[in-house]
Image 1 (cartoon, rainbow, N blue to C red):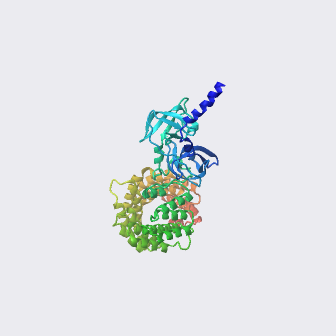
Image 2 (cartoon, one colour; image 1 turned 90 degrees about the vertical axis):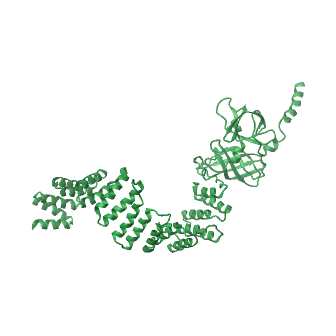
Image 3 (cartoon, rainbow, N blue to C red; image 1 turned 45 degrees about the horizontal axis):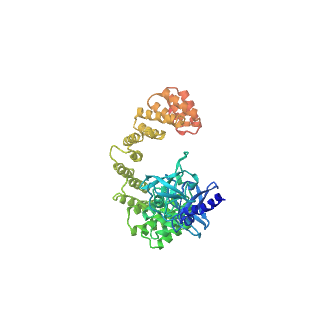
Length: 544
């Protein structure tokens, strides 16, 4: 009887040992339920930290999340945004929406070593045995043995304020509990830099836009997500920054990528009717969108025309005469076959900060379409190459190649070979059979037979089964007086391609040079039978 009386006497004392604030604090505790993309549902503890329904929770369950919500006795609230995260400490802050009542915890001050602390959800008393640095915040070691069931729960001080979040314990027998400073969780944010954190690329919970316009704008173009989510981000951006054009441009670009061309055009129109800070950028963006779609042959509506693109860019230039707008105008004019005007625009840009070798190449293309002389066009290629100085960088290679082809067209064969020599030096191990074949032809035209033979051998090294290369080698050997080797080249050509009349003709010419007219006649007749008229001319000359 005395023992029973003692127990009844002790119970009220235990109840009094639990802090008065405990019941209210427990109302801030919620369960975070996460639906994975596999369809599985995970759950972890979380807790409210402000009256708007922001919660702090472990991050890992959200890594492959499709959707999530929080719930407690007061009801359910949907997770609408990931407001910040830290993968190192497995912690995040989430925004929630819904009608359920929110009872948040108050943020407390940092704890010191030896301070008393309370473990939620049951109000177990504990003690801070060590305080370490976690950046400029604290990382607490507690006295009680670790419990995995406490991960994600708040650590409270004597006044009922949250000071930390309990961490996943070390997997060692007898290890203590650990808690991370709540201040770190409250300062977590989304930035343009962490927008594409590798650990969260498969998380479909939308991120919160960064807090500044510049960061938010960068975030829009850096975040890697679905077109539907990109539209959500862009629309939220326009709601927050209605005078900024970046949101409207991204909405329209995303709509166009989804082949919603009418909607994209309407978005540009809507933006132009608003009090946008830089309307010229909207006009430029629409001009680009129209031009890109038309040059790619996409199935766009009738109002997506090159005339509209030209009108837009000229209107943009009227508001703000930027060189990049002139470049866009020049491209549209070229696409419209207005080559003289396009040429003038490209050349005018060579006097601006946009001066690049490409401008001279564009002008050369215009002049070619205008029918100007090869020498005049070559001047443009000379100007492009002149923008580089020795030792030439790798990016100069393409310009030397283009000038070599222009020099070839202008009959300047040896200078063309010199350009190809520079190209070879710059490209080194990135050369192919076409390069050596092209240079071989020029060398052969200049009677540089040893060099030409060397290049055709390299071309054959790349493509040993290409009949044309073996025939070209045979022709070079014939010109070098090596008729027997030339005939072997013709045989190899026909082994690779029996329907190659040129090989029979060259074979016949080699036999003529050897004085074997009967055999030559046989080879020439085979070429004639295959429709090779030059072989008939050779045969007639032989019979005279």
